[in-house]
Amino acid sequence: MGDEDGHKGLRRRLGDPPVGDLLARMIRVDHAGEFGAVRIYQGQMAVLGSRTVASTLKQMEAKEQEHLQVFGRLLVERRVRPSVLQPLWGALGYALGAGTALMGEGAAMACTVAVEEVIEEHYLNQAERLGDSEVDLKATIEKFRDDEMEHREIALEHGGTRHPAYPVLGMAIKTGSRLAIWLAARL
Image (cartoon, rainbow, N blue to C red; front, side):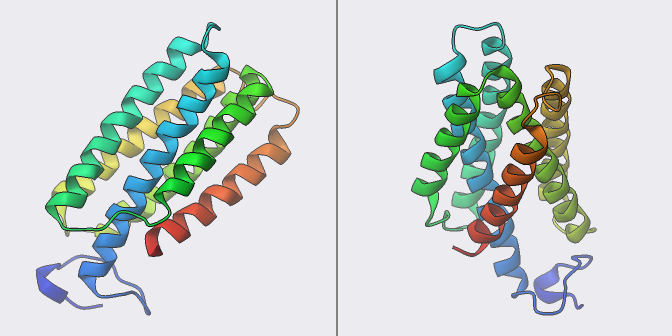
């Protein structure tokens, strides 16, 4: 599709909103997702805070906080409203983190594997859609995608897919994450 508002190279699809709205959706959903990730790790640390995996969780949460700050700044700079479901993302993220941690370290890591697989796919899709447009935003998304892939690898090393509930838990978390992405982009 065309070069709307000087965004040559932006890969748009039939039925996409105007470029400005499309970019706002990207920033809104990424901000909401990073907020949810922070809350997942906070929930996990509340349950697993005294275990050996706690320092790993704290490091991953710190990286998600950095991502959240960047997207928070982009919300302001680009005058994008945050998701109206922000309070829900906070509550659900924390509950998901605490709930999986109550099932043990393996389930907490299974949660991370599932979420990060969806986020990796999501950020890759965004980077591809940006094409040659929005070079700085694309570079940020690609850097954060690399960070999320690193979190997935750490969770795999900690047995994330070896937990007996992983097949069902992973599928449920991936489905929920994809639904959250869809909703946060729009609401």
